[in-house]
Length: 622
Image 1 (cartoon, one colour):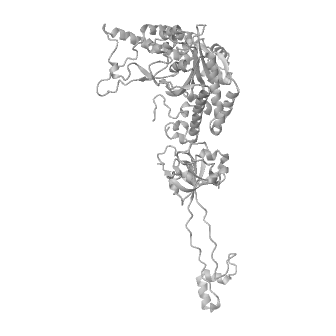
Image 2 (cartoon, one colour):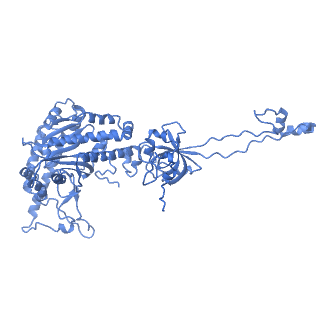
Image 3 (tube, rainbow, N blue to C red):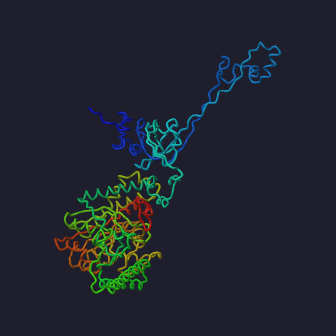
């Protein structure tokens, strides 16, 4: 009968140590199972194999023990020179006196030999104390290595990876560690080039750590943030599955503009032969109607004039002016293209022969439109993945690639989506406090002293619910001069306004609903008043908008008209209109800013610090 090969950890565990379970796929004991078991005291005496990276180190030299001098001429040397006469001491210490005594006939004295000092002993080998972390928890394990086991020079540098075998004992030094690992064997050493290793310097600020994202998880702060991020991912899936939602993967590459006014990343293969032949210009405006664009210019010009007359906030005016300028430039381009076309200008060009796809495509900014098609067949569905926005505006809460958790529900309306989004948010906060308590304690100590209190407040209290109009009225009553109060109805609420509502006025999460239709995506259902749409935002303290949702337009004629107003190429949205032609249903959903949720939980200020590999304008380091 063949014998199954034992793992290293299984080989060193005694029957009494069955509570220390080694990893099935590496044979080592994960430090979390040791350090989060009452500090590890209950595991004293267990033999384990651990692996991890050195966080800090210290070399300590053993004290040299001086041996007592041996007895002289059979006389016990119990108290220094007891039993030894002064003459004998002089004879042994001073050769001249010994010679004089012999000349004077003092040969009757028993001359003792010179008291020679003991031969010097070599200093004992030093001991190395290492704090080792394997990323499974915020705490580190104290590892004690005698230099007879491994040379200290191989272990001392920060970042060195070790796999060690030994016995867990009570800590021999006072401090935060209650147990330590007495190493008996070093199984692996992964050395570092210390002068080139970016984490050799202690306590690098977060902005410097962004320059080496492949190493920054080795820091205690970033490692803790990533464990919180992982816990939130699992919690989001758990909530969705518990509520009967099905997971659907939506495309990243799409021909559909999901919102209508966002900056998109164009995907092209038309320049694969650069250097072989002259690259050809690709027209991004093919299929866009000049008449529709001119109509949009009139509407946007009116918005800009209204903002100027009301002396509204500068941020909203700048954004509206910029939008108008882009639309005007587009109209000029379309007019120039129409004038330059010959009478027999073909409708299609040779672009398809160079492009991988036959139509203009880009990276998706939202997966909700594609989720709708599955919601209208399967009921309740959700998706989790990256979304992309080519926004060059530098912000601590925006990146080019962000992760979103999106839900879509058939047979539901605006209030259903608001209820679901709030329940979802509360579930994640509760999950962190219950399942991620050790990391949240670290966040409380090192990042944000209000983090746990903030999560508890979300769980215990319901979000305030106000309409867009009520939000404007509340802002106009603010006495703080730093907040722009002269807001005209129809203007977009800025980040400053939203933050003030959540942080100062309501001091907690706020759900704002029934927005003007011009500030929300084209697919949102229009209300009966003709001015507002059934959209909402969940705004939270320190972050701003965390969730954006809506009831979507199920009426064919209304949606078709809105698509034309936006100037979209109609053929690209035929599949979306088909959902209204055949078996239409009321439905709603929302998009949840997953990265911002991690920011909310940890209290950090910059979203780039909670994303494993952040992508921002002009920066992709790896």
